[in-house]
Length: 240
Image 1 (cartoon, rainbow, N blue to C red):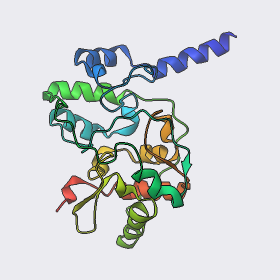
Image 2 (cartoon, rainbow, N blue to C red):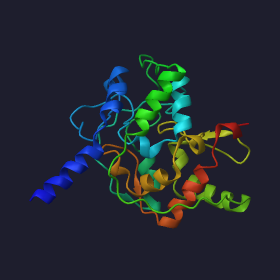
Image 3 (cartoon, helix red, strand yellow):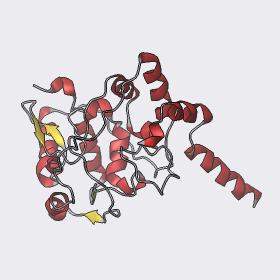
Image 4 (cartoon, rainbow, N blue to C red):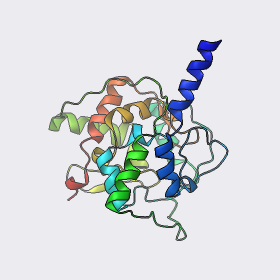
């Protein structure tokens, strides 16, 4: 009994922000818009969940964003739907195109994200990178660069087989931005996201967001890794 209680307590401490992390996030009022703890299940938040920011983001990008915020999700949507069941390739187009709020315009009343000084941005980024969850075990990721031929084949799967650009902006082979705007832009995914998080998110999105329109595709580990490799090539400095 004592042993089980010990492990339950350790698990809670891992999921809860540390006192220093909580202090800086509370001081900047981040919790008024963002979910900062997996335990905050009752409230609907206006901005993206950040209780797994340390799993998801690259520290350098996060600090730069806090200093100079940029639009990531071109359209605002209200999420109040249960998790989706696994989606087959044949169902992919229907799953994304019929989602409620598809291509909804940004509200003119949405306040801009505040910008922070160098010192505050560093402190906030450090605090947010400490927010992680007990997600399913991560799959190993492939870090090898893609050849032009590999990238073209994976890009075809990304755009045509799974219709990811129905909701997400990406870059075509000429470096031009194209794609839908109901989901977060992936134009700068290579600088913004962690490769291992992408693989984990594609496998079990519900582990990170209980309410999300992101389908859980029937996708094997090889394809998940290929998508992660492809998204790591998408960077704003490649926009032409």
